Structure formats: C-alpha cells, structure tokens
Length: 299
Image (cartoon, rainbow, N blue to C red; front, side, top):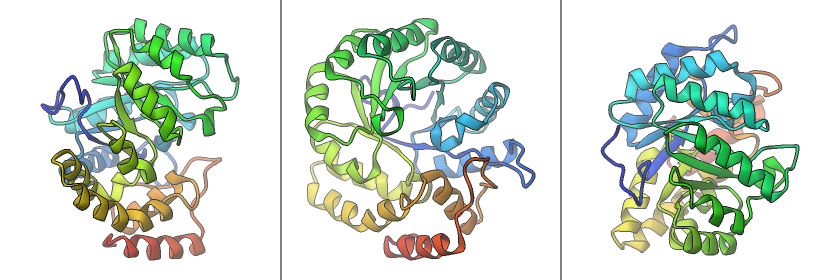
C-alpha cells in the first residue's frame, strides 16, 4: 500500500473518484482504466476511488467491478490506495461486493448511504456495520443526502466510529456546522466530497479530499492541501479562488459527463457514457472549455 497512510490520513490526502473508461461500443476499457489511473497517480493522487458514482457504478456489473479493481491495482496498487466503491441500497449485495473487492486485493472500501429506500438511522447503522464486519478492510463512509435521500446523523456517525474498521467519512452533506460537530465527536478521518468546500472543510478539521475535479487539477489540489497543512492559509485560499471556475464548470451538469468530456479534450481515456447518462452537448462542451480555461486548465 502507498506510504502516505497514517492514522490521521488513512487513505492519504488527495484522492480522485475515477471515471470508468469504456470503449466506443460501450464495453469496459481495462487498458484505458490502467492508463488513466497511472496518469492520475503520476499527477499526485494518493489514492483512487474505483466503482463509485463517478465511475458509473450503477451501470457496471459485479464482474466488471471486480475486473476494474484488479486492473487498477495492477497499474498503480504499489504506489497508491485503491479504494473500491461497494455501496448499494441492499446490504446483502454490498456485503458480496465488499468481499469480492477484498478478494481482488482492494486496499479499502467506500460505502455510500443506501439510496432511494430511505432507511431510518438504525437501518443505516446496521447497514454500515454489517458491511464493515464482512471484511478486514478499512472503510470510508460516504454521506451524500442530496443523492441518497437521507443523511447520516451525527449520533449515528458517533456510533459507527466505534467500529475498528470504520476509519473515515467522505462528506458531501454540504453542512459545515454538522461537519464540525461530527469531526470533533467521532475522530474519523474527514474527507471533503464536495470540491467547492475542499478548503472550508479543511478549516474545520478535514484531512483531505475525494475529488471529481482531481481528474484535471490534482497538482493544484495537492498544493492547496499542503499549503494549508503547513500553515500557509493565504496560499491555500489563493489556489481555492483560482479553482472556483473549475469547481463551477465541472458541475454545471452531472459530474461524470463533464469529466469524461474534459478527459476527451485532453486526449485521455474516457469513452462514452452508459445510459441513462449522456454525452455533453456541444454547447455544454463549449462552456466547459471556457470554465476550465478560466481556472488555468490546459486543454
């Protein structure tokens, strides 16, 4: 595993939630995934999230997920954390995915809040605990109520933090007040899951990022977090402000759509999207070029 792991930063500081490249006919592009993973780690990522939402996990099969984990591990597993997304809204299925990911060699698991069925807090607690009990891998929770329909409550996070393998939380809740309390009370390693809030979350105790814009600005994100950690808040703020057009542009529409468009513009592996996702329109691509250029991204 990568040497950037500490109890405070179990998965490093800068991770990108990687898209899943597909071939022109829509098949899984394992060679492209390896080339993209290598590019992202070379750019400065401590780790990659594979089979997350940005990886179009709702449309990839269980076998494809396992193949992707193995391929990325082969490419970069000796120098970066490879974290497998295994969250679904079915606890039993998530347990199966977790065990398969462990067998494939994944370094850790990302487990999103069950979506659509809106379980109560006790259901969330049992869901996450059951998955954490199923393997020996460290777990990063993923709290994103805007998609899942239900937040992980602070008291639930406190309970979950008692589990020896639940070590981190990816926070896309968008609530700095709740984040502040949860960080203070749980001791979990806190990762920003909302690029616009990367710097603000550092200010209340986050240790790093699980980023989408990391596909195009990993060096800047690394410089930002290292500046902040070293006490140069002014430099971190300057980078944050420089990246505002990138943060905005990459989320004018669904993030995987703009990410694949940006990667294609840069000549990097991406390929088409699987339905119900669609390619960006010419107008959206034109706006994306303007946004990225404003943030200093070379295309």
